[in-house]
Image (cartoon, rainbow, N blue to C red; front, side, top):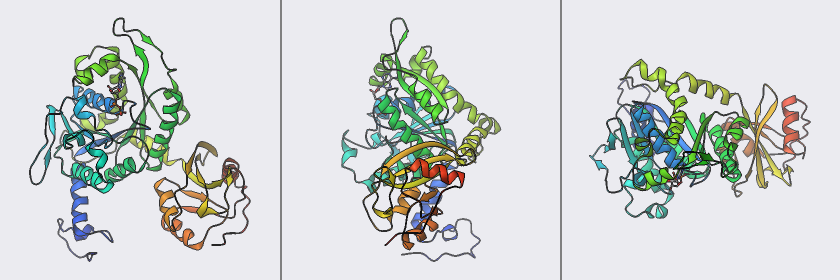
Length: 431
Ligand code: ADP
């Protein structure tokens, strides 16, 4: 049932005042509780990866610990549904979370580092697999809303891997994260996936704080010499190509596995090693971005955006994402039944293509495409023809539509669109 919205009430605590259409009063209260909780956290940083096993959780945990060692107040939230490994990494498997009726108390690892993990409420290690989607999101939402972090400089959030529905739903729950750190390994396969992660951030207007290349070279435990096993440096080149910062390389270090398996946070115990120095380099720009916030006041409750994040946001706002329906490598005339979409990021000022990604079209369902494309960050659609209903839905989603384009390869269409020479004919949709 939809509640009636009241516009006259002056009471701040009144939930209906802030109610959105179609939102129930419990939902308004949940949203307000989440916003209030998040407003005490200066920087919310997501740690993401294109696929599992690249060391995302290891990087998230060691980043949190390094930031804590640097004197910041840090929370580490593990919502990796597929394999919440933070309890294992930090040797917290036997600990349980305490909760009152209103709040969940995080585990304090030190005075300024608190931890909460989905793994701490799953009994068996395979429990998460049997959870249905809404159930998982319900628990994650409760974590975000109810964990009593107090005031934090950073909340580091270890997300599920990939760019599918699960990380997407978590990002949507968090709403205004300050940025993402993308973890990759140097191999080409991982690099292809990480491009998707960067595009995923672009689509969500989430600033990419940088790329970390993990397992980059092998560090000999005896002589500390680094040997390149896979060709390293690919993460740095890819970051440069995609115009996002590169945060640094973490070598493949047997001591990390040993430290993790025995639950000893690596950077605590090996602070003088090359690997710990690499972690320090990774967090340096993240510390700098917070400098102005932290020195301002220790009790500030606003989530003031910092200059570096603003720069990144500005840079990302300059790019424009164009979606084109494709069949057999060319623009598909039959928009609703195309095989795939080309998602092309462009710099409209320089009239340059920045990146192209091909995404399989979802199964045909009337009315789905406008929302599906909006979720993937499309701002312009170039199509041959399109029915009136789809045109209306795109307009509701603030997506500009250019119809009557010819069946040409997507890059050629985008170039002529940017140069203002795209030849368009009639809307030839017969639906
Ligand atoms: P993800 O979160 O991406 O699935 P994890 O952080 O759980 O990956 O790491 C997977 C495994 O790789 C763990 O056993 C971890 O100890 C190991 N690992 C991660 N990074 C390194 C590294 N730099 N050197 C050695 N082992 C690593």
